[in-house]
Image (cartoon, rainbow, N blue to C red; front, side):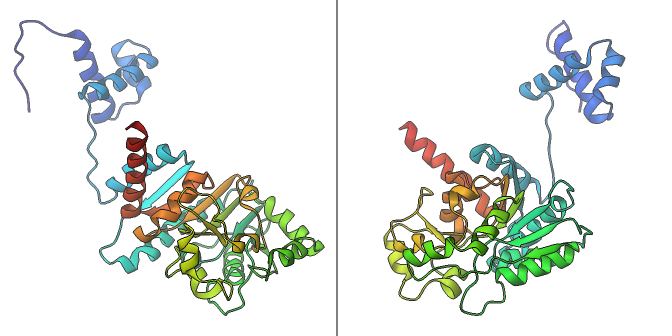
Length: 330
């Protein structure tokens, strides 16, 4: 809709901004072509488009169910210094969050595992990771090795590391290796003995050499860890009372991303969180607002490079950051 000018003069700067915005965003011209049309440099075009956005001359409207998710991806990346955030729309039924996040992770893994520079990829365990392998297209990567990066559990589970690692390797036509140890030792002394074994040392070195790993996480109320893996004699209530909000690879974190003061953390057989932090791309897939405290804890600790989550969880994570910034400024 055209508007009438109120002044008897022309603003040549704004006129150029409008012309460039129309040429590049409506006509679809490249910046180089627009520069040639208006007799200016490409750099001037680039700066002019930025100024047009700043003034509100050029506005972008994205009309899609995925629009809010795209905005949240940007906010998460900047709030938590992530390399990449992938946000899927939240479903009406909360029970469908995990399958949707898993589908998002499957797409991410499909992209990552095609990269020929990646020769070793580590996989932990959990329902989200299990479902993600069912949302991937087969790849042909015989030069790739898939490794399980967590110990097993004594109670049977259909989403353990071994099954997930095997399925992912089959999908990629890749080799695979298992970390053949329990998730928890019976004591800190037993854990030290396990870590001194040559077979454990060798496997941990291989895991440390992974270019990327996939992780899930859970809270301390109804997670897979609580159901199938927590050592006998350890009650979730006592971990919560000590400030525990959830686990990463069996380690129990507090809300700030630190380890709670409980012997369970000295019984984990596997990578330390410090060793995990040295891996180039740590991918965490988790959704559901009940997991916000543990996801936020992992993000605050800086463990995660790529996050896959759902829209409602992403909003809650962004709100956590905003609240903390307000409190610091008060």
